[in-house]
Amino acid sequence: MYMAKVMKVAGSAVGYEWLFHEPVFRVIVAFLAGMLIGIEREKARAALARRRHRKPGVEEIVAKEFPGIRTFTLVAIYAAAAGYLWSSGTIDSTLTAVMLGGFVSVIVVFAAFRLMVARMAGITTIVVLLVDFILGFLSGVGEILLAASTAVLTTFVLAIKLPAERIVGLIRYEELLWALELGVVLIVVGPFFLTSEASFYGVSLRSLYLFFSLVLASSYLGYVAARLMGGKGLAYTALFGGIANSEATLMALIQLLGRFARRVAFDITVIINTAMVLRNVIIAIAAAYTMPTHSLAAASVAPLLVAALLTSLPVVVSWRRSLETLISTNLEIENPLRFWAALKTTLLYLAIAYVSYIVKETGIGGLEIIAAIGGFVSSSATILAVYSIGIATPQRVAQLATIATIAGILNKPLYARMGSRDPAVLRSALLASLLQAALALPGLVLAETWLR
Image (cartoon, rainbow, N blue to C red; front, side, top):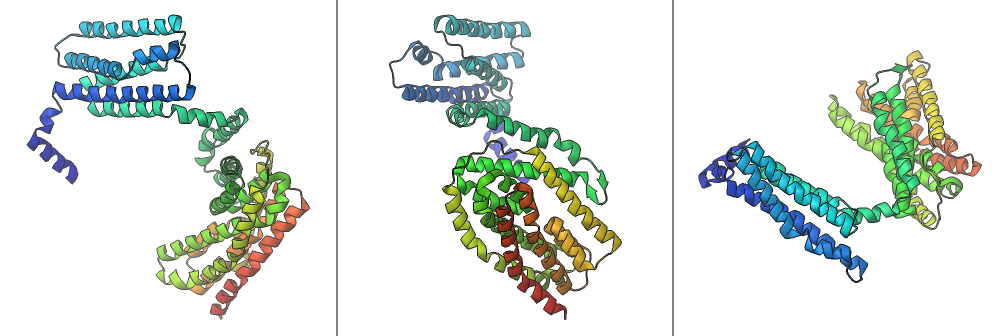
């Protein structure tokens, strides 16, 4: 608000406010907008000529003569003059329509010449001329900002044609279809579930939908990463996907890799678990410093931090080894979206969540059992719950948060089994999870020591 007042005062002082209402200024804006579009058209024509490397044909000759910088600039100035004369009342609507009709007549003649004489069926140039006229008219009636923004956006759309063509050329029809299927799940169906308040036995319909969507999205993003970056893309998908949802990411990648999963299941599991543990540490630190009981801050995070540092040790080897293996692997992925497999994984998630709900509601075990089963479903959500229920001592919070994290590590073999029936994949995921869970035990021992 202060800056707006300063600009207004400064504008008034030097006459800017008066200038914005001047017809000359409006015509100048139209001139610049038309010239911007014209420059892009000239550059695009030059790029097209360099790509073809042959003698100019009828298409190039026509493109060279009309339209170009001069044509687009003059059209914008013509439209700006018409717009100003009409908005100022100098001419009536009938004469304005006549001026518009004159421009349309020129466009019709030009379109007929392109189609019948030059044999050019494209209509982009004609559409751009119409847009050029509209933005000139907008400038003429005083809509300066709208005219300028329209010119910039139009030029941007025209300029990305060649890069977009190269990208589109790399996309197969099946890949486009998979993206549309995922779009239906996320955009068309998503709002129904995301706005639903329905829940049963403590599990909301929204959370089930989110898990199902994350499995599909992780699989598709892994496929896209593999297409763009090769095996390195899958390793990065494991790392960043593990931060978002480790269970969904592991299942999706194991399924995506198919028969190659047995070669990297151990390393992928280690990477995903490491990302999950680091996320839990960040959540715990944020929760500890934002909860009303600030005494939780340092003491409650220390054991979890120790566990995170130790469980991250294997990732140094696994990251390098997974890159070497995946880069040398020639993946042939038929379809990254397997809805039935995603549904089965979601049902597994529902079963685990239901057991967790029964334990919490019936009080079968103590807080340790609840933290373990809750962590088996979602370790990050369980840690947030541990920090928010108002436990008195930070040592107790540290113990429960570490238990939940270890449980989150140990649930990976189940999701690996859902992604592949290969026993070797299950053994690799189990070994990786047991190794990292064992490495996290010193953090739990530290928390237990503090409790005594």
